[in-house]
Amino acid sequence: MKTLKTQVAIIGAGPSGLLLGQLLHNAGIDTLILERQSPDYVLGRIRAGVLEQGMVELLRQAGVSQRMDAEGLVHGGFELALDGRQVHIDLHALTGGKTVMIYGQTEVTRDLMAARREAGAQTIYQATNVVPHGMKTDEAFVTFEKEGETWRLDCDYIAGCDGFHGVARQSIPADSLKVFERIYPFGWLGILADTPPVHDELVYARHERGFALCSMRSPTRTRYYLQVPTSDHVDHWSDQRFWDELKTRLPQALADKLVTGPSIEKSIAPLRSFVVEPMQYGRMFLVGDAAHIVPPTGAKGLNLAASDVSTLFNILLKVYRENRLDLLEKYSQICLRRVWKAERFSWWMTSMLHRFDEHDAFSQRIAESELEYFIDSEAGRKTIAENYVGLPYEAIE
Image (tube, rainbow, N blue to C red; front, side):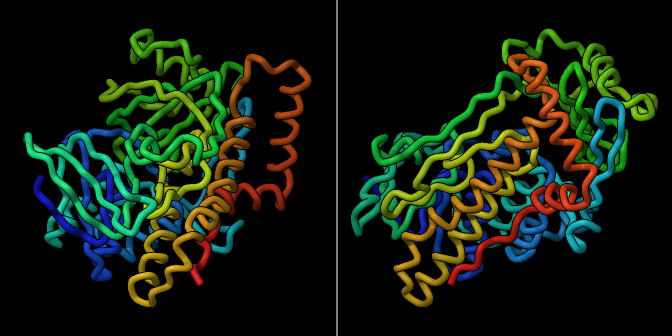
């Protein structure tokens, strides 16, 4: 068995693993990233595109914001379309100047990959049978296989940034974790198309036939979603059927402006809320989707991963520079305070904007009334806005 050594072993080369690696590398802390897929596979994932201000600032801190700042779209608000009525949520005015950035997760990943290559930091792609060991001891290590050879990676700490289905969380004994989960009775049918956006900001639409979202990746590439039953299949949806249904769920003024075209990607994503507690097992820390999933309605998944990265980076910085070992055990509680607030907001947005077949008429009216209460009140709109732009990161003292 061949041996490697690093200070922080990172499992997963998605945006959270790469961002953590870049921040640590810039601070002089050695990292090695293990990824079971190829770089092309990682870049082929179609994911989120709304970045909170906190994540934007974290990418700037990591020195990887040049292309985002040049090409990203700064949005100072978003639109709610409620059974034909349009309501503007002015993020900038309601939060004292905060905004969000429209910049695709694929592009974030591409920028981070390029920065890591330029820095000469090591990422081992197509590493198989990755297994963390010794997490509760002073000698943590990770074993993996690459091209038929078995390797041992000795390290001080392990960051599990390998997603919901990754090995990091699965390597923790089940009786050491408490799982909180809600599975929603519908999914999002999404398409990517090279068409101009129907509106200059995102549109969240509630309609009697179900929810719809008009999003974008650039001024020429759009991402649209429709609420569909979990039993539905993407093959049942031609491009024409999708566009027709989207027009039905949008206010007429927007439907008339919708530019359609051939889809370049089409998929159905199930919706779930999921949290594990704690987010740490000894010397291994769970980051992002490895520890929590949110329905995408609140645009929180990638942003929650970024706040985990910020917390872990700042703790490790104090550990290595100031020997603040006492901070290590605070990682989970600090992260979870913010995680649960984001879970609440994502659940609330999902509950307010989707059709639930199991709801009786009373429950449906209550949901509609609650949303009307929030949007008709400046305090309510402010609550929506401050959650949407992202709650502040907790300082590490």
